[in-house]
Image: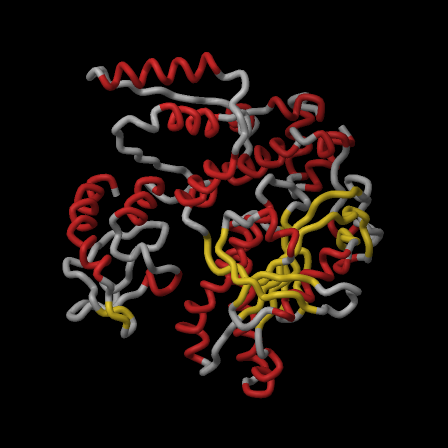
Length: 437
């Protein structure tokens, strides 16, 4: 019973040692105890919950092997690395608050601390949204990894999206804490992709971290210095991977400290429209369809049936990269001369928590009056006679109220004829969506 006694003492439940001993409950059957068993043993409600939580932890092999020593007894030696250092593709993002030195001379230290904490919180929220790993806070700067410790196929895209989200978050910070302290906040973001060696543990205690060795982290830091306020600058390798995913401004070649050759850099402006990206992909693919004649034949036969008035619904299902989109492209090529209307709705891994996002996005690209606007401008318009709350326009997460009059004044900008023409179309579409919101 010594092992069970030690385990109970570890969880501040040592008073039940004798109860367990009297009922022949040993450590070997601990994982089989249920709430009903604990009731029979006379364990109080609060302690039952604590015991069940601790028992659940025994499902972890390491936890079941031996009790964890109390926190005060743990050594100061750095924990062993769970894996050896390895070479892998990594996207590194470095973001930095602009003008922090000037702010430190202007603001009280407590106010500056509050400002930086709010800045870091906004950055952290955007980074976590896109599965980034914050490696280190460096004063008013943040070093972020995309692709470590867990790799994703779209890590470079997640990094750029996170950078643009951080830039967008500055508007909200300036409207809140920035206005309160009479300070204008801006950020510079640098993103670089390349091969690194990562995983070896360096440092001790609170300074312990996994080392990343290679040119990529240094390049991201240098690119951040090249960026202007509220700009996201990417390296050439990142641009090549995401050339069709975002709109860019070519900033030319720059000589960066520590690098022998000039580096060509781009500024990421905004996400490219998903439908136009697909059309560009179809036009530039040129890859022949191989081994899908049977599936393509089924689609073509269904298409012919639908033209004769027999509606068809087909599900194409398969693992990522198997060629589902290419099969659809082949169908469109085959029926290109027919008279049909192509309507596409696309899901997005970045909006899994947005209700009806595919429908919402489709509407904003086809008939939404604000489809020509992005970022903070789309979220906030000026509508005469409306309250501040009612003037809030929908973001990608949707909204609960739509203005009943067309907003023909947006931050002093005059709406284009395109917006006016689409207003009535969007109003009717929005009304149809309301029952589902």
